[in-house]
Image (cartoon, rainbow, N blue to C red; front, side, top):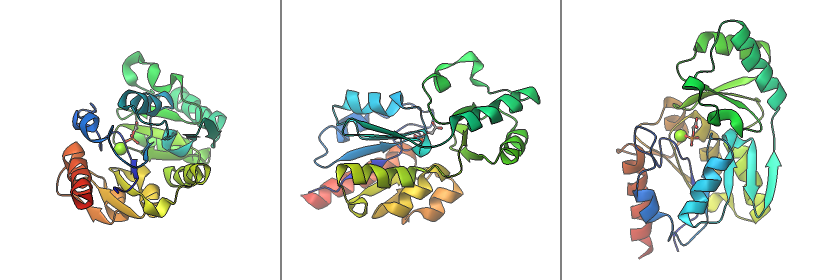
Length: 225
Ligand SMILES: O=C(O)COP(=O)(O)O
Ligand SMILES: [Mg+2]
């Protein structure tokens, strides 16, 4: 039996330009164990991915602020505190970016995502004054509550579904995945991973993006034969 998976999305199941790599549609629909998506994206994104892959909707969104499993939704974090940071950042000359694309934050329930073009120093200064965290995923700066993480959310999801987190294989690429790596039994950072993910992972892969993730998934399938 292949092991269950907990997978980051952006940078892990994608190409370098943030598109889902078609191999996700080849390898995941027939995976014979649970698959959990753990992402920094807003709630609907991993739900849609699971839906279109034909997988049960077991998802962690917003860097751990949202857990959805077995029809149950749990939220952590303080969205008002995160939006207070975003509003003061704008007042002090910052720009959330996204070129007017409001869908990045429209359905976000627990935190705020800010474009990588933003003034990072100003954002970090404002967030620190408000006691909120800034997480750099390589796709966005997320203003999150400091007590929220994908790893804690993964433990919560496992307790809802009565899964053993230690049985899972995790793959990810950035600092928001380090906490998942600490909880899953086995963890891999793709070659494009940042320092925090590389340090937290059991193994750093030679290949980047979905090339790296596919080597792990294919090796797990081969080991099961
Ligand atoms: O949307 C982001 O900022 C990152 O998403 P990810 O956690 O799936 O890499
Ligand atoms: Mg990622």
